[in-house]
Length: 177
Image 1 (tube, rainbow, N blue to C red):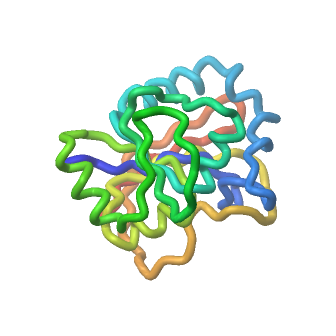
Image 2: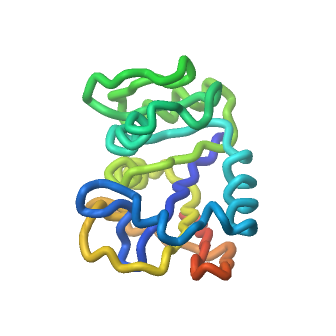
Image 3: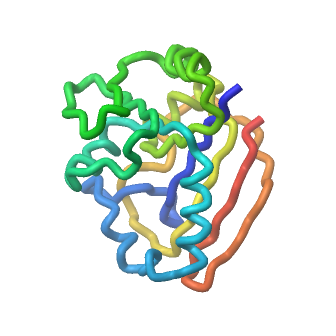
């Protein structure tokens, strides 16, 4: 049974992108220069064998013009017709349950729900998120794209792990149950 892990960075006030939908605020922390942060991030990345993302998050990828995980089965959930950057990417308008039925048929084990907040809310609402891995960045954005959009679900979250970094980041891992 595949696990879906919502793995994302968030400001202290719960935003994953600024009011313009950008994540440039992350650059001021030089996270890519921090060896420990990068080792942990790369370990996480290598543990996933599939990726889910929403259209807004995919827009960020399109701005860069290159897919970061060639060959990794990827579902972009959007009602817009978007260009495909890699043959491993497929567009989907299906429900979270239908997408998970498709993923189960592929025999994938760990799926990275990359973002965004609307997609995470829809998967949480459908009971399709197993774990939330959150990197909290010590900044207040005041407004922007929320970590999770409106949902009627309030699942019990059990803390499985936490770790702080010298740059002020804090990583927390919650089991959803």
